[in-house]
Image 1 (cartoon, helix red, strand yellow):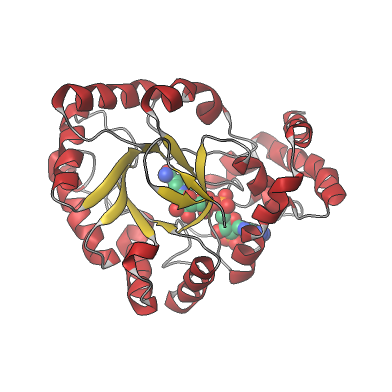
Image 2 (cartoon, rainbow, N blue to C red; image 1 turned 135 degrees about the horizontal axis):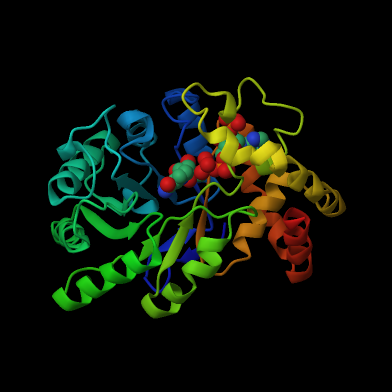
Length: 323
Ligand SMILES: NC(=O)c1ccc[n+]([C@@H]2O[C@H](COP(=O)([O-])OP(=O)(O)OC[C@H]3O[C@@H](n4cnc5c(N)ncnc54)[C@H](OP(=O)(O)O)[C@@H]3O)[C@@H](O)[C@H]2O)c1
């Protein structure tokens, strides 16, 4: 495994990490989750991602039970949660958002579900237009001073809102966000590469990036339709289809155009797409998702491909999906 510093902080995360969205508590039960977390930890993964909203808290319960069962030393891994969407259907105003009230309560609930004393990373899952940024920054600062959170970050915040959070932190002596959690893959590059570009140097921020396979699309699995056991066939995730497959399924052609490059390198499309994300030095960790052990095992091998990827191959890949 390779470890990368999260921006200019002292925290080092494994270049590949593992998250629970859609899968834990839905496609993946405790036995399978145990198998995958054990495999990941054995392969050097030191970061597991979760959120209050993933299957309404059940994903955190599954991860917490399994981590307790596996008895990894607590100082050998990091775990994160995220606050914003709430952990119930139709949340009340106090059960969602980034008010001090919900940020504190959601943290306490995540600690209980994950069965840990502190969260290594705690993310504001989206910006909250109904709460002043200063209130949220102050709440995160409180949690850090209480020892319940070690580092905090944002997820899919506009760059200006992240800048505002840094200004509030600087003016008040509060802990500032060290990390952003954005989507990043061959089909979604703009935010990480352009919008956030000034933030890395100015504030020393890192990124824990999500959906490196664009919800599985970049593995090529949707080329001949939607497999019955795949993410796009999961009840409740119909809304994902258009974004993933593109208007008129246009993204399928882009994925096909990558196949010759994968063949040339003797690798799978999934490994190629994951390794491409790691070429960006501002990516602190690529968060993998998997509904099956074999997927995780294959994806973890993407690191072996990295030394063979260079700027010219990356350019060819980018051109292939641009066409
Ligand atoms: N902050 C945020 O807003 C946010 C949003 C989304 C995700 N995340 C985090 O980022 C993590 C990773 O995101 P993601 O799950 O969307 O990652 P992803 O790699 O884009 O998609 C993972 C899914 O693709 C399929 N897959 C993975 N490897 C495969 C392979 N080798 N061959 C075929 N299919 C494969 C599996 O789904 P099926 O087998 O079901 O098809 C798997 O669950 C999440 O778990 C979560 O922790 C954060």
